Image (cartoon, rainbow, N blue to C red; front, side, top):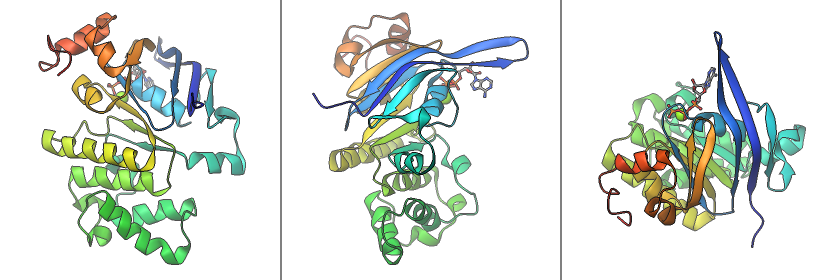
Length: 261
Ligand SMILES: Nc1ncnc2c1ncn2[C@@H]1O[C@H](COP(=O)(O)OP(=O)(O)OP(=O)(O)O)[C@@H](O)[C@H]1O
Ligand SMILES: [Mg+2]
């Protein structure tokens, strides 16, 4: 068996708002193998985005550990952190919030190439053009403002930016949730194609079990800050062990009573 790419152990993180203390993560452990898609599904407020932010070091956990590519990820700093960061990218639900709204499509992708020195400067333009083509965007979109393109196109730019640096893992937090059904389907296809070509692993987060089912090799189900069940996607959906998963299955007509659909 190949060594896992990422192993998170016993992560906890609480937030206080007013006098209320919410355990957003309450002892979460998971592992992701190279090239696989782990789907993380759960209802609103169960802690999915907090887990995404902790894994990408946007939010520090209160306890627990993360090994990424064999390193103690939470202890890395300086040059070693920068080098490792390249390999762990993130795509959000609303890329507009993640981009400088004045940026151009080409600028967003070129910045990622520059920051991580992926290709020599003189090859950057050509590489941007190739990435734009790779994610199915029309050529010539480079000069357009990120504000002036559609939501689906913007999500393709976010994917192009993420794959530009040839990462080992991309955390996608509700990355297709704001898109309408046909656009969403094409984005999911793009992600699957990219994975087949590059061997990148995904942590694919969604509240929508049908979407999770379409892209995931394994599924982890989350409720109230904990992972309540986990296993191969088809097997877990065919025989749900938690109330949370039974409810999620009940909300997807195509899966209800026909778990192989
Ligand atoms: N920065 C914060 N300050 C205070 N509370 C927070 C913060 N971030 C998250 N929380 C709380 O932690 C819990 C988990 O939130 P989180 O955003 O991780 O859930 P989620 O599963 O991503 O939900 P959704 O499906 O709505 O995206 C919620 O109760 C939320 O209100
Ligand atoms: Mg969320």
